[in-house]
Image (cartoon, rainbow, N blue to C red; front, side, top):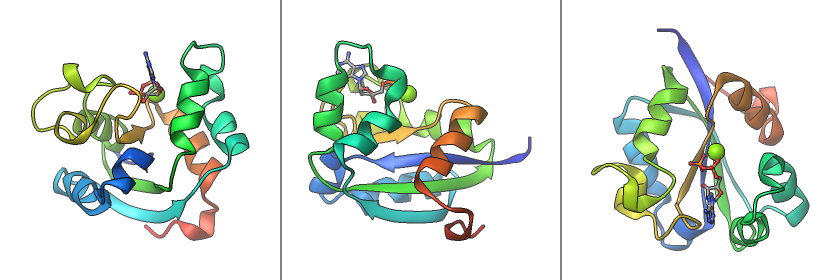
Length: 140
Ligand code: DAT
Ligand code: MG
C-alpha cells in the first residue's frame, strides 16, 4: 500500500474542550504523521464552500453554525493507507455507532459535534488539502 496524504480537521467542539493534543496523539499513535497544521476560525463562506457537497441536506445550516462556532485545527496527515486509516481512527459519523477506542467514541458529543473531519477518498483528500493549504505549507 502506498504512502498517502489525507485532510483532517479538529472541530470547534474539540478545540473548545482542549482536545487538540489528545486527538493528534490518537492520530499519531495510529501511524499517521502531521505534515501540515494550522489553527483556523473559518468564515461562513469558507464553511459553506468546504461542505458544499452537503448544501441540500437538512442539517446544512446547523453544520455551518457548528463549524464557525470557534477555532478548528486543519491538518494534512501522511502515512500508509492514510485516507482509510484516518477514517478508521475517527470512527462512525454518529458517536453512538462508533467503535470503542475511536476518536468519536472517546470524545464526540453528538452527530453534529463529532470532533473531527476526515477525507473519504483520494479525490476529496486532494481537493480538501488544496482548499486549506498551499504546497509550501506541507512539509513531508
Ligand atoms: P463524516 O464527517 O463522517 O464524513 P458526513 O460527510 O456524512 O460524515 O457529514 C458531514 C458532517 O455533517 C458530519 O461530520 C456531521 C454533520 N452531520 C451529518 N449528518 C448529520 C445529521 N443527521 N445531523 C446533524 N449533523 C449531521
Ligand atoms: Mg464526510
